[in-house]
Length: 152
Image: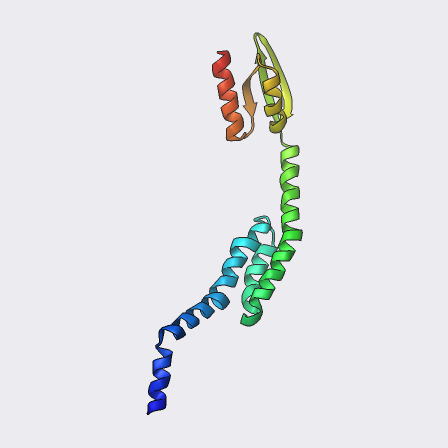
């Protein structure tokens, strides 16, 4: 009977519970959390690899999950993140806006990227944007509004 009491006392001790919950967190919760928080954002939202990785996680044996997740992190950095950066730079570079500029009575209609517009406006203090087609960033909108107030 002493052996059973000793085992029960050990199982209910504070050290055992801490060890148990630490192991459960490290091998159960942490690999999935790390995959979703760090690896999946490397891939664009519509990329099919995102769904594959989430599904494959639970097919990997529990003791190998950390190594598998870290391997996928390396793959995501060099494949997914590279693809995501390339897509973002293409859309920004070729995202032309039609802008109507006014200087006194003269009106000019041009096609320009938002980045070029924000660099061009400070060099032409007498011009302001009368209208712009397409979405623009808050920073550009604030600059346009400030310019209108100054020239009005």
